[in-house]
Image (tube, rainbow, N blue to C red; front, side):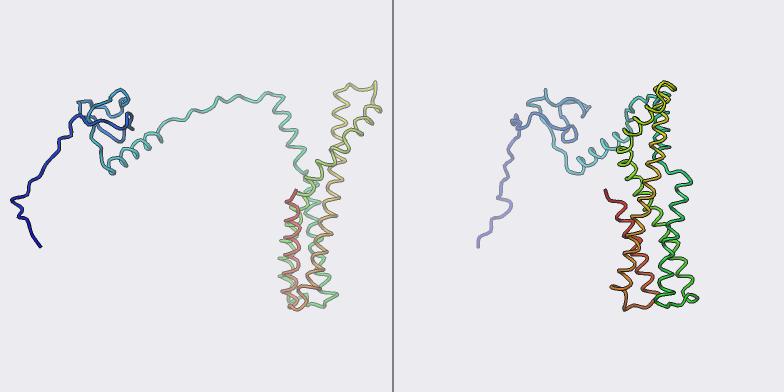
Length: 257
């Protein structure tokens, strides 16, 4: 193998003068002008043929990060806010009142939920002969939690049923009220009376239907769990699984369309 001494080696440096540029435009964060321009943010497009020095990746990342930080401090343009008119506020308040359950209806949901959740205690104590004294605390906790879940499910189902019942009752009720108060009240008063009657009827029917459907599903789930799925378990574990799973099923079904 032959070795060439280093003193006999010659290096040739090719001058890079008037090199053609392949790209006419370059982002400001990628190059710095060498012709005495101090502002890197100036336009690059009219600088065809000028010499440029490409900076390294560290400088590029620093430049990009500085641009990002500058954009964070820019004040966003907020859309102009226009206050609601009195008629729009009245409509919003009216819609809120109509869609929110009254305290009496909410109390009905809570009471029926707790009462239904206590029915499995009767089943376990008098039919399956489970001890009431030793399981009293568990019965109470599971019944309260399940009752609250059933109450929320009643509210969800009633809210969906109310919309459907309103669409079915509205037109017949308007005709009935218009015929009853014809010549006695103005059209605006007749429409207001009709709206209140529709709200009362739809709320009452929706609450009754929701309670009946949810109670039926809950009790059917409890019976199925007790006599088919949890019959090999102990009484306390069977009660916990059957009641909690049935209440969860009712809540899940109430969230659907």
